[in-house]
Image 1 (cartoon, rainbow, N blue to C red):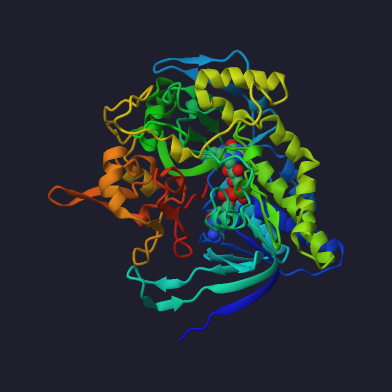
Image 2: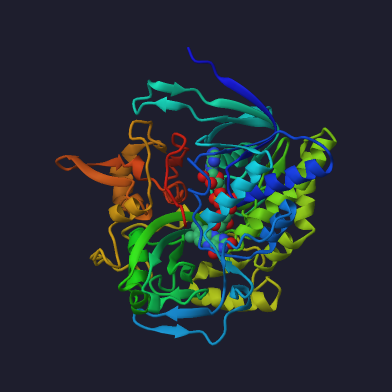
Length: 549
Ligand SMILES: Cc1cc2nc3c(=O)[nH]c(=O)nc-3n(C[C@H](O)[C@H](O)[C@H](O)COP(=O)(O)OP(=O)(O)OC[C@H]3O[C@@H](n4cnc5c(N)ncnc54)[C@H](O)[C@@H]3O)c2cc1C
């Protein structure tokens, strides 16, 4: 019999991303300045710092400068200052440079960084401040006392695929804390439960998402322009699908290349990975990549809903920071500085609550006051209707966007209704405008790669002998209803080949879940049309290796 252990902390952070690390560093500074000692713990599902971080990334350095000031250290020179900044409209064969870059997309003063490297640096600094970080420990269950959050239980280790304990079995640990900070990033598995159980999204608009697919390339030296940033719209998405491309020329001759696709797309035959491959086949992109080498691949969802989709991000014994609470400016494709800022403001509210020995919802609502009274609200308010404006397609969206710029974010409609992404999916039989081309992509293994090759380059590893962490509540639906109505879109919206309909016996196709391929992007939990897929954390330490991403 192995007993469950219980640990006590003053503050428990779930997830080691920029939001929680900036927060823990601020909290520790506040405590030290007041001559207090706080027991601050942080759990992260990844095996080490930064390996589950995937971002573009061009960073607005404002909040990072605050971290440097909290630490009293010099700029560690982690990034490349943005130089040229271009915006292109792509047709299938041509690229048209916009004569000017919209103000919100200008990157003067920003830095091209690897978020994975930045996160590893932040984690190192946090540990030097005395913060305990437990890597390979996923938060799996919220400890509630009534409606108060009292901490989190971590996942068990050493359970076999059949559900039985193996010889290396270790039970999860209960970590109890005065305040639990949920910083799981986009579509957090615990945050989802928390929001639903406490109705934190009541009266708010639905959250909507995009999925970003990214590769890192080492390109030929003559094609590399250090600091150059390029954003695109148009091809390969057509006018009815939200999204666009990015190409950032980073240090060491590397190019960060990606495509972001709004998950409110309608066409069930759209294949996210195939669409990204088409982007790379565009002449302007192909030219850049030819002769180069693809080094890394990854994918991750992005919360797009903005201000009106934010759940209540404070409550009895908890706060939510970063992407998990929709602190992201989807117009600028920037969330890192807002994640850090939300964490820093949360730390101030938490410290005040702990000092007063009262971590209730009322005391922690100071976090909301700090958000609402400062730069975060100001930035998010200006783009509050941005994604919603594109509901009618690209051209309508651009008109709305122009009007939003002129009217301080309002545009034609204030806070229009939006519905969850999976409800947008049309049926295979529907006559869908701009239906995706059906011709199969031929992967040339030079510019375009199969999903299997790409997953290999994501460095993803999970122990094979563990319970499947993608819970499909009714696989019969996949075989029957979903096959007929949507043609099993999971095979196409998953960018990592996790879902496959295979013929197990003649004439009978069944769902096979290749869980060990999962890159933790959360797209399946969002886009599955019947809401029957639930993503939960796998055994600690498993997942992608996004070092350098
Ligand atoms: C393709 C793409 C491009 C982007 N480009 C940019 C850009 O150019 N500039 C910009 O500013 N932003 C960009 N963003 C957004 C930016 O990456 C996010 O806003 C930012 O990373 C959010 O930080 P976070 O700390 O909230 O979450 P994350 O960085 O996602 O960190 C969350 C951490 O929590 C861990 N975790 C999750 N669940 C659990 C659990 N249950 N238990 C333990 N650990 C858990 C995860 O492993 C992860 O390490 C981009 C995002 C994507 C996907």
